[in-house]
Image 1 (tube, one colour):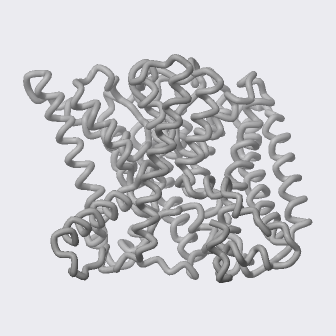
Image 2: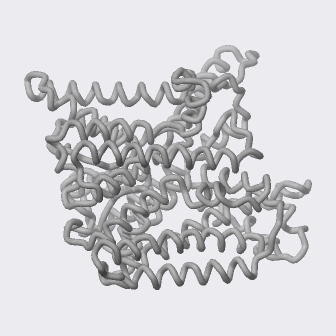
Image 3: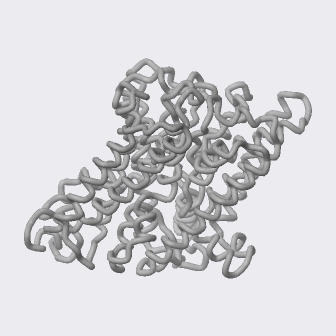
Length: 504
């Protein structure tokens, strides 16, 4: 059965997660002299389930995109549940929904929190919050692909299923090598950022956790009040700002930079547009702040640039209460959360590449309306974009707006003001974490009702997995023939039969 092939890969993911869960357990023993057995139990449960799945699973060198969808979805759902167990078993949260919310917020790099006083937590649990950010930043699948050698060339489908975003120029059969390069870049950013923060005077523990939250664009700060504490520390803000921008860029571009030079950044059209949106957005916010204040102040430059970058990259750090800003500035921030960063980054949101593709295809459609016989293709970085990518981008926008609308309606039934609802849905679906109004940067989300929390949890997972990876599991045709002992039903779904269209 195909499911046995999936079991083995998911088992490997869970075993990897079990090892990560042990890190805070040993840290607690070394740092506080306390062994928090909630981590040991959670690690054991994850490891045992992973071992069982691995043992009863089977090896194969052939995986389909459908396998990729199921592996990625299962891995993230299991990772969310097991990441929540230490919070729940230890009593940090008495409600499993709250514990799950915190864990999902971490691994999806959203950064919203259910904890009012983070500083009162044992350092072990603060470290685990940071680790969930860091693990989720590059994704469990990429971490596993970088180390495991027995998945074969078809492991590309795991990467493709998790990303669900066009990447012109990437050769999928080399995906394991690409995953390794991405992870090395991620590690370099982590080491350099934490070292610079420590040299800037940040305590080593806070420096490490701030780094986890920054390079993953996760935003789970290791202290109460978040990064407000560094509003008067320009060096720290600059370090965080630089690495937020870097984390929002395409990590594959950085590999090209190291091989061919810094000019590769400017040669990548998406990266150029990404930097331009950051600059334009920051200038608009700066103009709004200066206009209201009656003049330009140096603090306006720092606040506008840091906050816009934080919002657009989905990091969710705040050094000022932007709820007090003029409407224009808040609207620019709100729009930035939709834009997001580049493909191949740790950011959420719609992604710059999708906006580019939609804009180019829309302009081409207008031209063809004027010149019906014109033959012209949409290009990006010298590559002609396949028609399926154009369709996939249009479908993504449709589902994004559909989920945004449904989520807004559901949460509005709990009595939240409409402004708070829109900000909350944008912040969770775009994996930003920050919101507006009564859920702004100075507040936590503890006031949410259970229904709103569940909707936010689903949104965070959908946003992190680019919608399609989870939504495709709801299609009846996905499961048809999947558990059959022969490959007949399975082949029809993947288009290897002329009757495949009947299942759509």
